[in-house]
Length: 299
Image 1 (cartoon, one colour):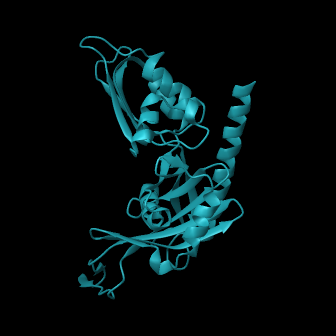
Image 2 (cartoon, one colour; image 1 turned 30 degrees about the vertical axis):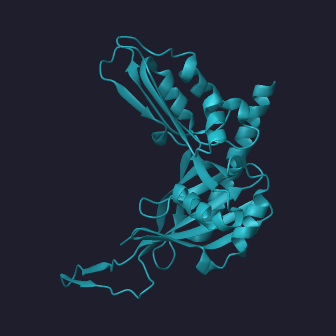
Image 3 (cartoon, rainbow, N blue to C red; image 1 turned 90 degrees about the vertical axis):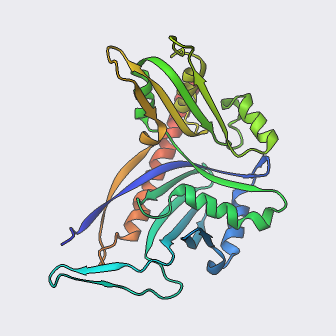
């Protein structure tokens, strides 16, 4: 029998939106458009997967999103452990065995907290759906809506432990307005070119190492310490002092996250109100933390 509670992973993201080469200036207008679409028009199908976003609600500067993801054409297999028998549950034509994902976005701070599900829509998938849904509004320009992971404190700490760095691979995301001082000419060129992302790899000369204080490593540390999220992927390969085996440090393994323990409802599913309330509190905490960090850096 399942316990009365369940642990859910919550992740923090920077939320950005661009129309062609320019950043969106009015996020509320963007979501007003998304809200105006009927739930039936907020369905996105790719291959055998279907993602529906029936709930997009705006309350002041906060937006709540609820998404369902399922695989088409798959009837769930049921098994009776008492009678040792299996059966297939026949779903109706438009039904899928779905996983539910909840997201809270702060439009003023461009920050979001999203529930992580191993099976189900990830924040990146939801960004892809929102991009698809806004294409008609902004045509002929191409929209790009994305959630970029915020690095947790452990990421910089892990890099600091490396005494030698051989390779640093970085995938830049388009930043929000006002973040332009934090990204280099490569991102400027990407914006001018209309590119969604730019990938760069810094490799040391044979038998040599990258500078662990300046250059790309120094840039990573400075940017992340400033609370800016302009990297969609980062991998740093190097060695800790006295250890022969090379270590790979990936941003995806050090994202800002926490575990929320919530009650199960009568059907064994997590209580939605508890997930949403804990997500909102976490978002509030992260916003306060980032404001304090900016104030300290300004002193």
